[in-house]
Amino acid sequence: MPARTDDGGVPDREPDAVPEGADARARILHAAAFGAGPASVAGRVGAGAERPDGAPAIVLPAARTPRELWWRAVAHSGAGYYARAGGDLAALAAAGAGPGWDALAASTAASLLRQMGGHDRAAVYDGRALARIAGAGGGAREPVAGHAAADAWTGLAADRLGRGDWRSARRLLARCREQCAESGREPARGKQTPGSETETSDTGAPPRVALRLHWVTAETAMTAGAPEAAVAAARAGLEMLEAGAFPSERHRVKTLLVAAAAEAVAGRPGAAAALADRAHAAAQTAGLVPLRWAAAMLLAGVTENAAAGAAASDVHACHGILVARGGGDPRLMRGYL
View: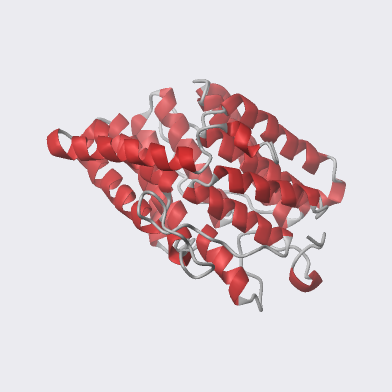
């Protein structure tokens, strides 16, 4: 793959945005990653043989630029094709596209490892992303590098949460906000909630970055024993999406899921079940198997009787799909990791 910055040599811009003049192939990749989701493109490229679970295989077009490789990796990971995502990230890392894309490949790999429970290994890749940006000098202020650094800081915070260390997570989230300020996008601090001084209700950061901040802020508050602060952060993310801030179905589902978890921790199982049910249905429609799995697990915990049984059954079904797609063994991603 050519080591160029973008289609036709156009300089890098926001990595989750569609460049002007993008062709149908690029738009398919973007739709799978940051639009209606992987299922929306099933059957549009290739034959798409039916999978054991009855869903058509997700067959994505080839990527021609670093941006499209990243979109392809994100789309594959969203559908649970972790081995394919690892291959995409390996190609991106080998493309020589510059520090921003190198760092974004590393921070995205870290996200995949976290999905498979590898928080310690994920921290290594988030650290690699930050080191690549730090060594880039002035290039670290490019939009792609800014996204990658924010992803790495929030990722490191999530990794600390995987070990129960919410105090370190708070400090890392604060550093992410500082990074946004340094790049000229200072998040506005919202009304602070006791027990969580890092909450935000609005942000000047790019929408995708802001949503990730809301997610990890909510998760940090849950771990810290501040459920209402968690609910506030999760609701701030939902308000962003309802206002049309970012058209990604994957991000909408994840935000619903974080809000459901926050309501559960706050002792409101009815509200949690309603949100988790919405997340589960949307994830199934969009072909987002990892999020469908997480929503089913939450539903099994906050519902009873037949509803809990159906959710538990889907947990097992999703696990089988993910194992078949490479999610059961991080070694299948050794092409990059």
